Image (tube, rainbow, N blue to C red; front, side, top):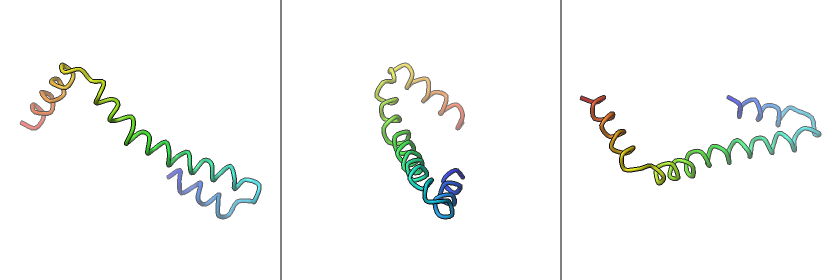
Length: 64
């Protein structure tokens, strides 16, 4: 939703605000990429074996 608002402001807004809106759009894209493809593997790599077993048990019990 935020991207839609920023795109609208980028297209129909004034020339003075376009640079700022472009920076905001790039920030949203980079932040989303970082959250999905960098932070998730780091989280999984730092988990202990006990944490993984707890998650697997909860997942198994939920699907039964």
